[in-house]
Length: 261
Image 1 (cartoon, rainbow, N blue to C red):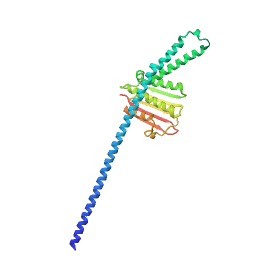
Image 2: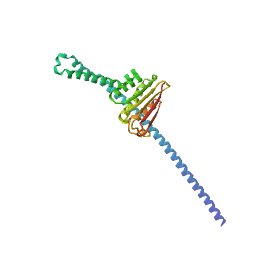
Image 3: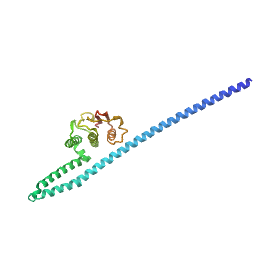
């Protein structure tokens, strides 16, 4: 009898150890699997982020190439054609104008305006031109152009002179400024804009504030829109920081800081 009880106790102990071992194995297996899944998810997120970053870079590069191509086309063909048309009109003897005098003079005036507008557009699209005149003058020209065609109250201040070791940085910053202003014009529904730029510190700072309808700032990363996401990408590529503050019906303040090295 005692022998049977002893055997039963040993059997129960063995079963207990077996169960404990099985449970331990399952726990280790589950933990290891979860770690592998977590590691895999991190790798997947990293690959996704890297892919999105490269895709964004390619998109921006293509955009810049298209800008340069359009700029060249305007300069080499369209502008030249309009200039030749103007020369043809101005070369006509005014005595032969007759009753069409006013229409011909008006046509010459419109051609002159079109040539000037196209020249200005060609300059804005061409990054070599932006490099040659610098960030400050490029932004001032852009503001002047906006004020000529839009009823905006623009409060503008630019302190100091930018000093970047890479001239491409000024081109990128100008593109960011253009994108910010386009967002205000197209989406903000604002008639007043504050623009502050400061190059007097070790970091170049840009702030654009509008008084429009605003948006949910935390939804930018999940947005299908290219504008603000491209701005965030460009700032990070330049080792800078960006702060976007906005709420519906409360306008938006977008500030960025880029190292001047």
